[in-house]
Each structure stands twice: as C-alpha cells, then as structure tokens.
Length: 338
Ligand code: KG4
Ligand code: ZN
Image (cartoon, rainbow, N blue to C red; front, side):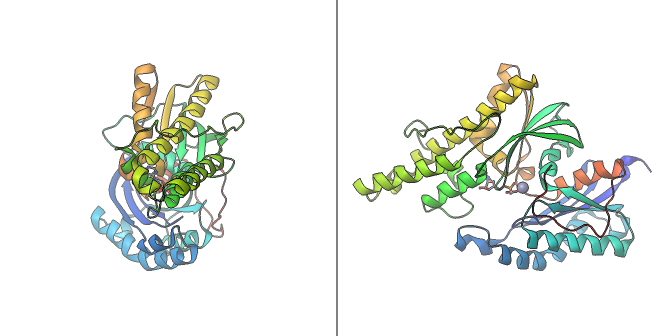
C-alpha cells in the first residue's frame, strides 16, 4: 500500500465547531463543519453549551464526512483527533468519540495538537504552492497568536507569542464594544473595507522580542469610544467603518512588524499564515504585498483558515507516516504547548 492510499478520518472539537474530514494521503475527500449558533446571544463561547452541542453534532458530522468521501468506516486506516489545546469539555467529546471508533474498528489512534494542525493545513493538496522549509508561520486565532519556526512537518519551535489577548480575541472584543455579534472578527473585516484606516490612531503596544501584547490596544479602543460617546451619543453608529478600519490597520501592523523582525533575525524569508484570523483581508493583503519585496508568502485557502478537521487529518497523516500513534489512556488537555 502506498502512503498516498492511506485513509485518515480527522475529528476536531476544541472550541465551538464540530468538524470531521476524510483525507486520502494529502488529498481531501470531505470536510464537514457544524458551527454552533447557540453562542451568538452570549457574546462569546459558553463552554457548557459547546460540549452539549458537540455531543449532538459529532455522530451526524462524522457520518456526513464518510458519506461525502464515499467510503465506509471499515476502509479507514487511522483516526486523528484534537487532543488540545482548547476547552476541556469540548475536547473530551471529540477525543472520546475518536477513541471509541478507533477501538471498535481496531485501527490506530493519533492525537493532534490543534496549533500544529493550523500550520500543517498548508500541506493539504490544493492548486497553491506548499511552504518550503524552513519557514516562519504567523498563527493567529481566537485563542493564540504565535510566530513559529517550522523546520519540518513535525519539528516546530515557538519564537514568540502573545502575553495577554490573542489577535482574534482583540478583534472580537473590539467588535463587542461596537455592539457587533460574536464572533466579531469577520464583521470588523467586512466593515473595515468601507472605512478610513488612518482616521483613528491607536498606540502600538510594547512587548519584548517576538512577543505580542493586545490588551492595551483593546483598552485604548474602549477609552476612545467612552470619551467620544460623552460628546456624541451616536459616535459608534456614525463612525463604525472608520473604527473597524483603524483597528484592523493597527492589528495588522503589529502582527507584521513582529513577523518581519523574526524574519530578519532568522534570515528566513518563507512566511506562512495560519489560524482563523488568516481569513482577514488586511492580513492577507499584507502577505501578498510582501511578495514584491523578496519574500515567499503562503496564505491558506479560506476553508482551512478557521477551525476544520482537514488540518487534523493532515497532521494525522504525517504522524501516521512517522509511526507516531497514541495510547488510548492519554487524556484531552486544555493547555498543550507546541
Ligand atoms: O482558528 P479559529 O477558527 O478558532 C480558534 O482556534 O480560536 O479562529 C477564530 C478567530 C475568531 O476570533 C474570529 O473572530 C477570527 O478568528 N476571525 C477573523 C476573521 N475570520 C475569523 N478575524 C478577523 N478577520 C476575519 N476575516
Ligand atoms: Zn483554531
């Protein structure tokens, strides 16, 4: 059997998306994601509600992935699941399901680090070129912001990360201040397209080395709005697009400045983007513009930016080839460093 003929089922349940995907080698056959509307009214993910929704979605989502892939579960060679990091109650649902199915089918189980998987999403076969090693990956999601040096599929080192809020969290918290629905990142992005990015200037936070800090930016955003609302109670409605554009411009500037600092220090000019915030148009454009300055940049397809199980199955495939199988007694873990 060639490596490419390996069928792997990926299962992802670290936050509020229940996802299942089937890959044959690096080729995706199915990628199913069930989101959870239940959190919208709460302005953020409610862990208890997320676990319950995962439990309701997991079986139909896996069934649908197998149906779309046109294979039976008996054809699977291994099951890869997200072990962490994430919400523990959510991780337990996907992890327990993966273990049960792997033992029922008597096939190997592979545990996957969610942040590693975001990076390895770049290796799912598409028309786009895959990153060349070594490369630096800017991983930006709702829970993490990291600059990772990637020397090989399974050899990675975190060079810098956020000291407080994640980049996605900064988008979401600012959106909440503006009264936008959760998750606000995509809405800020959309509204920013019609706004003036230079209308409001926010101070850039200070963080050592390749680390980030976003909590100060959130506070200055909040203070600006609080002060302006005292003068004009319709300040938000009258300036939403400019506020979104200015915030997005600042966030992108902070992220790119640190990434380029890391690139200078390491001499690595292959730069990749990963995680939910890589769907952001400002960030994607900043990566595209770098191509004219001697950098190779890699941007994931939209379906692989936010949480999905294809990236879990892809990571599972590399671990499968390396013989890195898991023990059924390993537990899910909320904190799981790369
Ligand atoms: O990777 P992901 O799906 O889940 C986590 O692992 O956290 O990332 C979700 C984050 C949310 O904070 C969401 O607001 C943000 O990604 N996001 C965006 C955009 N699309 C998703 N932020 C800014 N602009 C976008 N277009
Ligand atoms: Zn994620």
